[in-house]
Image 1 (cartoon, rainbow, N blue to C red):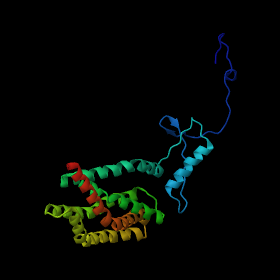
Image 2 (image 1 turned 60 degrees about the vertical axis):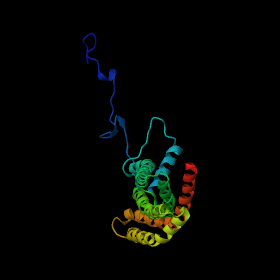
Image 3 (image 1 turned 90 degrees about the vertical axis):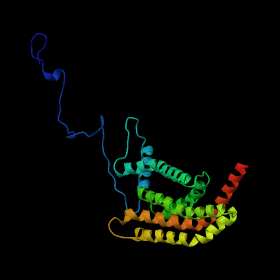
Image 4 (image 1 turned 120 degrees about the horizontal axis):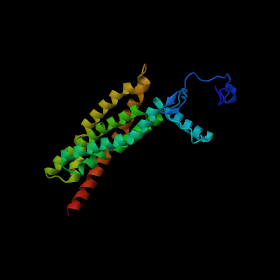
Length: 249
């Protein structure tokens, strides 16, 4: 390097160098350097528990504001599924309500049919809890399937009760006769769906751990809802019918 008078100046006058170790490459996520830490789940540990433990550890360590951590891969898909689950269930219920409202040309009767769904959801969650299965995307699919299976039982009773009421019977007599005459087909279709889910819940082999929450959710939801449907549906039907008649007056 030449100075102002044309003399050579050594490089050490303005800089220095030394030998050291450095990574061959630096990974980036966007424009930010990043590092990936992988982890495996021990036997019997749910992914939700692992995610909660990692978040707790991050708070205990006290990450500086300049460091930002996020999940990727399966853990990221798990978090995204939790975010979308309420929206997905709400959209399914809204679609069911609209279809039933158009079918019966009423705003009241769809509510009677939808009143059977909470018991199915509670039964599915209790079954998953008792069998130590986590609420994942597969079990959520089972809960959505329950929406279609369980509301079928109420539809069979409400459809018959509406026809009997139009024929001149009182609402109480109409729904009582619907419970009696629709009991056998309700039990038959429910048992068929429940027995069809038994291989999913009890199956072994490759991929059985993926299908097991689906079968457990279906069986638990059907058992619990079946115990309550024949009671809650007539009660809600009569209550909403009285409310509708009171509103018309």
